[in-house]
Image (cartoon, rainbow, N blue to C red; front, side, top):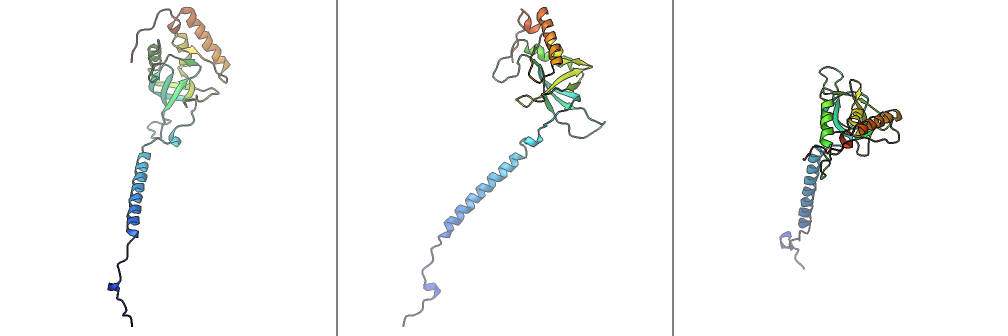
Length: 205
């Protein structure tokens, strides 16, 4: 009669699951690390929902002049000491185009520095009023507006001084377009700025 085998007499089982378990743990740990890192970086990355999507007419304060026809502004506080969030908006002056000064990898264009200096001086008080037209944003996502200080329009004065050209797009106010083109004719007749026979001051980055 065959003798029954005890548990100690049986051959040890091959633990096939050990290598699979450690591989799974390794990949799980790597996945967790990637998820944590993505979440950490996501805390600091700008979200599309955080970007302002609308703009309103009214009074604003100047944050910075980017170049002759582009500004950074934010709404004035509604109440003294208000802690409400006031987003910074990038505003492009509508109806005009000034020479480039900040385009990456491109040289500063003639009269670009002068245009930026003119805008800076015009807005030295730090407060301005935005007047909107039918077009509210350009293809780069910048808000479009006419900028006024004490009722005087910066867009028009830049053209009159010869530091900008009038540019009209469908949907822009025809009345203001006429004013801008009249200011341009004045600058051309007087040979100011970009219409001058004299080159602008040499300017470099």
